[in-house]
Every structure is written in C-alpha cells, then in structure tokens.
Length: 620
Image 1 (cartoon, rainbow, N blue to C red):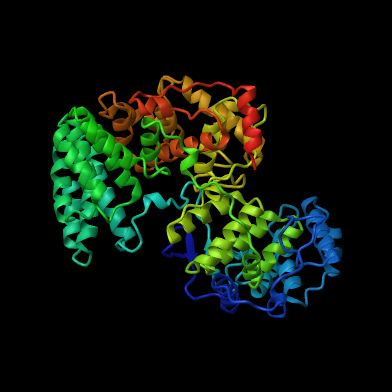
Image 2: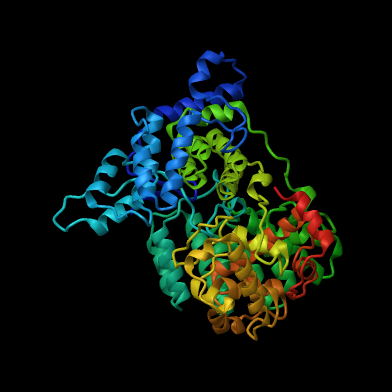
C-alpha cells in the first residue's frame, strides 16, 4: 500500500515528491484568483477549461459533461457490463474506446482498474504491472499494487509502491475545526512522543512519562505544558486525583496562561473535590488561554458558569454561560444555548453556498477534475470521488480550490467528501460552512426509523460520514460501522459483510443494536452509557464504566471516561445529533436532560407523522 506522511491539514496524505499536474493546479488557481479579484477574462481564454453544461440524460445536472454523448454511452456500457460479469462484452466495447486523447486514457485507466479489482476477472501479474506502468499516480494504484504483491513470483522485479497525494480521513477521524488549536498559535507535535507519553501515563507510569517530556529538550515550553496536562487528564480518568492535580497545576504554570488544558483539568479535579470556588478560577483561565481549541475554551466557560452557580453567584453564572453559548458547533456550546433557552438552528450558517462558473472552471482546468466530471457523467460517483480526493490532496494549500471542491461535492451528492472539505474550509478561512458540513441525505432504514432519527443521523455522521462503503481498520462496515459478528447477532441470522454496505440494511441493524444496548444491564437505558458501549464495545465498557467517579453528574461522567476516543465520540455524536435535530425540526435526544444536569434516558420511540413530514421537507 502507499506510504504516506501527513500534511498540515488532517486527513491529507502526501507523497515523497509532488505528482505531475502542478501546471493544471496553477491554472485552476489562476481562474479562482482572477474571479476573486474581479479581473475580466474573455471566453476565448477559458473555453479550453470549461466543457459545455447542458441538461444531461445521465450524471449530475449543472456539472460539466466533458465526454461526448457517444463516448459517455460507451464508457457507461463498459462499466455496466463489468458490473454484471459480462467481460467478453466489456473487452469488445473497450476496444472501441479511443484512448489516444487524455480523457480517453483516463477513462481506460478506471475501466481496467474496475476490471482488475473486480470479482469476475482473474488478474495476472503482467496485466497489473502494465497498468501500473501507465497509471502510477491513479487513485486505484495502491490497490492494484497490493493485488500485484499477491500475484507476482518472488523473483519478479516489482514497481515501487505508489506514492500518492490524497485527502482521505479514516472513518470517525474527520476534521473537527473546534478541536484544533488556532493554526497561527499552534505548536508542532511529535506523534511518536505523544504516543509514548500517553502509553506510559495510561499504564501507571506517570513519572516515566514526565521524565520523557523533560528529557526532550527540543520541544517548546508550550508543547511540554500541553503534554503534562494530557498526563494529568489521563490520571484524572484513572481516579489518581492527588497526583493528577499536582501535574495539572504544574502544566498550568509552565504554560504561562496560554495552554488551557492544564487549567481545565485542574478545574475538573477541584470540582470533583467539591471545591467550586477554586475550580472556578481554573475554568475561567482555560477559557482565556489563547493556544487552546474552541472546544476546550467553551468547556471552560460552561464549567465556570456551573462553578459560579454552585457558589451562589447567579449574575456571573449568566455571564459565563453566554460566553459558552458563543460556540454553537461544540458540545458545551449547544448545552449552553439550551440552558439559556436559545435555539440552535438560528446559530448555524445553513444557507447553501452558490457553485459558480469560476469554481467549475478551476476544477475543470485540472486533469483530476475533468476526469471526475467525466466519471460523474457515466454514473461512477465513487470513482469520481477518488479523483476529487486526489485533487484535494494536491491542493492542500489552495483554500479557493478546496472551497470549490466542497461546493462541487455537495452538488454531486458526495456527502462524506463535502462534509470533510467544509470542516477544512472552516479551519482555513474561519467561516462556517454548515450546509455542506452537516448534510442531510435521505436516510431510509429498512422498516423505517425505530429510534430518534436525529440520533441515527448523528451516529452516521460520526461513524462513516454517510459513506455506505466505509470500512474501518478493524472491519466495521457501512453507514453505522457495524462489525459483521455484531450484525449477525442482532439480526439473529447470518447477514454477510457485503450486505452491511446496503444503507437500508445497515441502518436497520444499527438501530436494532442501539436498542439492544439500551436494554442491557450494562447501560440501564442511559444514553451516555449506550453511546460508550456502542463505541468501545459493551464488554469493554462493563470493565471500566463502573470505576468512573462522577458523583451522579452526567457531565463529570463524560469527562472522566478513561478512553479518549470514547470521550470524544460521545460528545461529537450528541453534538451532531442535536444539530441534526435542529435541521430536521425534531426533538434533540438527551439535550434537555443534560442541560438540567440529569443522566439522559434513552427512549426508543418512532417519530410521529408530523415530525416525519417536517423531516421530508428538510431533506436534501
């Protein structure tokens, strides 16, 4: 598989050397730059980049159709024949394809990749090596190379593994701008050091973790303070409060008021000791820390408000709750808005942005963009998305191109890509793009909704970003990322891994699994415990869930979860569920209870007809 090194933007993988096509990217950037500056260009100058847009018989209305009708029909026929296993017809039709011009060659590359990787053709090593020689930078090159490794003899000389630039976050690891430190204030992190420090702290060797931080003299003081705060947070979740507080206070001091996590963890530890007056100052310091993510700053403001209320100071309670409400795309920001009785939908930027001619011209001026439009024209959206992701990876420092790709992905119904690019755009330009970031595709579970549709949308957005083809590193599949054995259990029959990529089946079984967890003794019907079990597994949760020291406080329960991934999963799932509830015009699961400081009870109720009608009106 392709070797890759991460770029600045999360989810983008970069090759060792830049791919060919830089000229095309510069051409695309020039179109966007001239449009932004208002500089007029004659149609003669841009005609080469912009295929005529006309009402299509196939494809996506309003997007370029670079293939002639006859070529499009032929390519569509070849893909259809291959999908049905008619390889004789596919080969004969492929012989009629003119691959002597660039777009024809690009179509041939995708046709052959589809054939060689498909279930009906037994590929040979010679075929695969020949394909890689012609298409080394193709989106399918890593898969072709991996297949070649299984076909070639040990003595064969093999081509090197493809080195691609692509934007492809793994399921559940999409960009979240609110979780990131502002780029102009952030420090460079060392993933290896992070892992070693966290591993030692989590295994009961906090002193070793601290010595490792102190020994690494090349890191900045702020990075060191952040790592110490993370050690303190781990110890807090392990109920080692005395040592955790000592380290958190030390991190707070070394961060000189810039790194908010140390202050935030100090506040949580003091809150758990019921020392609310002292906790208050630390939470306020977390909100004021500049080298801190919006999520932590907002959490600091919310807990500061709670501390003022526990200290019988309602005036400052309101001040700090309003500060928390300024971030409506965060867990605590939405809670604050509910506490204050402020709606959610009005705080989001839900106007659909206009896809302009300059956007289409810029993308069409690139090889990957033109190829993607052609693939949409022949009804190959998954392959088109691969090309758009390749272009996004090559354009990581071109915010205008990323914005154009977001708009095109939204137009084409590539919801997972548009949502991911919307988050990148927000991180880059500071402006929310909520319509694309929180798309509302028409989810249709087999048998209908049996639990809150908002919760289904929230889970699906977090788990797969509405990508029915998603497969995690551990084998979870489809929209709600179900493990095949879990699906078989709740279905009470052998489902088969392939069927989990059927959206209707996956959504049905995913809802059934949530309902199963709700009825288990491990969760007791509590929504937070259900989500924790959904993410980490019920057996895992049963081992550590009872150890959480939460003092019957649901928010303290979340903060004290020892698995960082599960902690984040619960907050993101609820945040997205509440946003989708606002978008769909239905009740937000668990929001009222959490705003009141009560553990939210799961209710498996089917939405009434009035709610369903509101949903239908708002669906894309």
